Structure formats: C-alpha cells, structure tokens
Length: 156
Image (tube, rainbow, N blue to C red; front, side, top):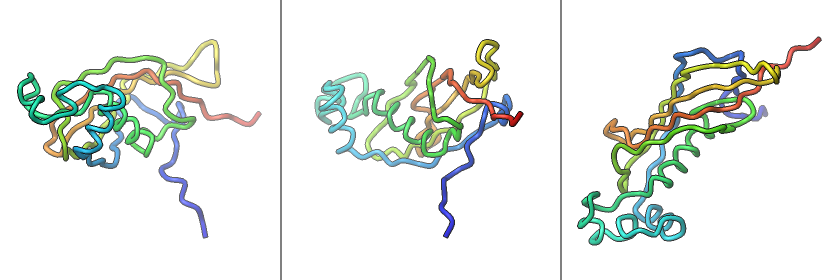
C-alpha cells in the first residue's frame, strides 16, 4: 500500500508571484484558549469571561500568540506546502480582530515576492502573506513572512 505523504512540497522554482494556498480548518475551543493563556499569556481577557467583558475585547479572546501558533499548525499541515518546511527569516504580524472561543480558523496565503539568493544558489527567499480568517470570513491575523525556500536540485 502506498504511503500518503500529504500535499506535494514546492521548491522555489515551482512558485509564482500571486500563487494562492488554502489550509485546512481548525476549531479553537474555550478550554484551549484558557490553557494556552494560563501557560504563555496569563492576562485576564484570555483567562476569564467576566474579567474579559470589562476590557476592550468585551469578551474572552485568544492570545494573539495562540492564533499565531494555530496559523503555523495550519501552514505546516499543507497551507503552505514548501519544500524544506516553513523556515522564517522575519516578518510582520497583525491582529485586526480577536479570535474567540469556537472560531473555526483557516489560512489563505499568497506569494508576494520570490528572490533567488545570489550568494547561496541552493535557496531563495519568498515573501508570503497569510491571512487567518474565522468561520465568518473575518480576518483575525495577517502574517507577512520572509521564508527561506530551497531550490530544486538539478543533476549535473
């Protein structure tokens, strides 16, 4: 029986500016939100409904870092099928609205720029914008990342 290795992994040479990738989905529970917050971002608006209602979030909200971690999981799971893995070299992150309990997240990524390396011909840099949306299509995170992507090796 053949083993399913998931989506085909793409090298720098396989990518094109404007190319779009869509991830699977991930449902975020209240328990996951509070457990992550208790360990990594123990602020009241991530831990307690009542305390959160009195903040600018007006209710329990996931830590932005939790949203970023779920985004990474979705990218690694096929939302950015890059050869060599998702290897970051910097970027910017925005959280335009909070992620809430029971949100179902999905990531749409677009290749913005491809820059082959002059000094390291076996790789290049890709600038990828990933928008994480909830089940209503509302953007909860925008990650614009510079990623190192290997080139396809050519037999000589």
